[in-house]
Each structure stands twice: as C-alpha cells, then as structure tokens.
Length: 384
Image 1 (cartoon, one colour):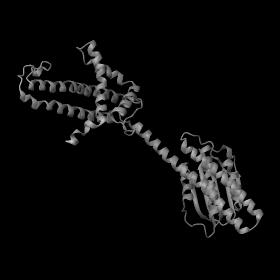
Image 2: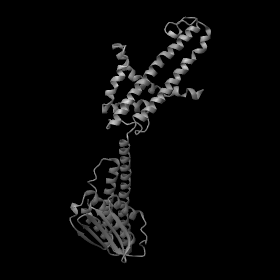
Image 3: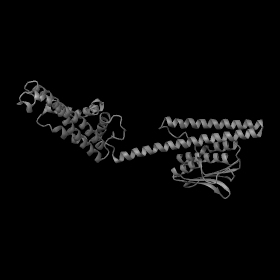
Image 4: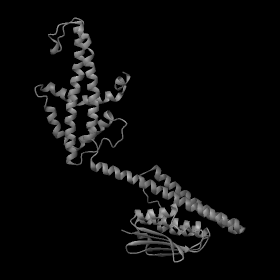
C-alpha cells in the first residue's frame, strides 16, 4: 500500500501535472471566445511549432517540470536547427495539447463524479453529472466512491510518465547536437590530458634540475659552485612556480587564452637551465622560430623540455646535441646524447610516452630510442 501511494508524496508528480495543465490555459481563454471551435488552438500550434525558438522554451519547461535534476543531455534547450527538429516540435506541441486535455478532463470531472456518488449514498439526488442525473439514491453507492479517485490517481501518474517519455523522444537532442556534445566532452578530456602533461613536463623538469644541482654541489665541495647551483635551483623553481600558477589558472578559468604559454622562441631558457644543471648542451637553430604556428611552437617547447629532462635524469652529464629546424612543411626537433648504462633500452616512461602523444595530436611523429650509438629523440611536427 505504501509503495502504491509513494508517487503522491513526490513533488515531481504534481510538477508534471502542472506541465499538462499549462496549455489548457490557452484553450480555456479560447473557449470564452468561441466555445464551438475547441480545435482552433491545436491548429494554431502547427505554425507556432515551426518557430525555432519555441523548441528552446519547451525544452526549458520540460527540464524544470518533467525532469528536474536530470542530465542536461536528456532534453535539448537549443533552437530547432533542422526541418526534422521543427517537425518534432510540432508533434510535441500536439501531443502535449492532447494529453493536457485528458489530464484537465480527468482532474475536473473524476473528483466531481466521486462527490456525486457520495451524495447518492447519502440519499441526495445529483444534478451536476448527466450519467447520474436519473440514478436513484442508495447507500450502496458508497462502495463506488473510491473508484473515480483510483482512476484519477492512475491518470495523473500515468499521464505524467507518458508526457515525460514523449519529452525524451521529441525534445531530446538531435544527432548533430549529440555529436557536438561528444566533441565538447572529447575536448574537455584532451584539455585535462594536456594539463597533466604540462604539470609533468614543467614540474618534472624543475625537480630534476634541482636534484642534479644539489647533488653536484654536495659532491664538488666548492662554495662558488654551490652558490651557482643554488642560484640555478632558485631560477628553475621560480619558473616552475610560474608554470604551476598558469596551469592552475587554466583549471580555474576554462576560457582563459593559452597565449601565455612558453614557445620555442623561449627555448634559450631551457638550454640555460640544463647547462646550469651541469649538462653540456650544443644547440643548433635553423629557420625563423617566430613563424611557427602557436600550437606547434608551444607543444614543441614542451617536447624539447621533456627531452632535456631525460638527458639530465639519465645521461650522467654526457654532452647532448639539440637541433631545432624550421623547414618548409615541418618542424624538426632532435636531441641526441651518447648512450649510457642508465638510459633504458626500450622507450618506456611517461615522459617519452607524453612526447609521442603530443606529436600524434599534432599529426606528427616521434622516434625515441638508440640510433648510431646515441640515444635519440627526434620529433617531426607539420607546420600546416
């Protein structure tokens, strides 16, 4: 019994009933004008449903009254963009009008019928319901009083579920809207992955430089060298904090522009940081770096940063060669250093995987591994 009455205790039952009643207000006004043509409002709804903005209003009502708390993708609130969407809106308006008429009739006349049955059971003759007008008064009608109320319960709950399902089907997102939502979700996931790479590359590079510098200063035992090492650690730490603030700012403000991210024009900062950490880096730049497209230049900077971090982490201070070449159709980034026992023979590690993923996202390719006695990281990124 409790389960049967549970819908009566839920607010959504009554908001759905209210949703069904709303179009009947227009019908009621028209009935005062011309009660002989009750079909006119339904006819007027056909051209109204073809207006693109009507779909937005109907979607907002459906979200608030039929599906409160549901996911936004269940019912669309965008204007109708295609002919099919406009026809679906017209069908929705007609469905809502028809179900609203049934709901209005049931909620008005079924309680009246129950009341008149109670009057018959009390020995009074009803005069408001035509079907009971000639019925003789008798106490047995008391057993029929709950019947209209049970029917009313079924109508209210059933029509509420029916109009909700109709909203899902007729006001739900179109194929184009579902595709746009999927693309937006993919962009969000890619942005999260990019931010994770940003943190890994920037903070990982700073920590590697700090660890190498601290170890070298302790081993050298030279106050002058220790001062230089501490200065390099300080500069690298400041740069890492700036990168961290920028990445956290992106998390807080999803629409924030990426123009503040470092590019290959700032590659000198990376080289100086690596040299200050004790690495011998010979760099060669060919071509105008300032003409490289922004996304390619920014990702190229991070790829170069991760490659230099690997040199500091695994190569034990061996000399490294850096080559950055801007060619006609491709940007070439190459970092080579002699193989040592600490460099893994297989291209494992999140840093190398991140380099390959960055290159793949830009339509390029990355080669990492032994080559002619050296450890090589070679990346080619298309400029168009």
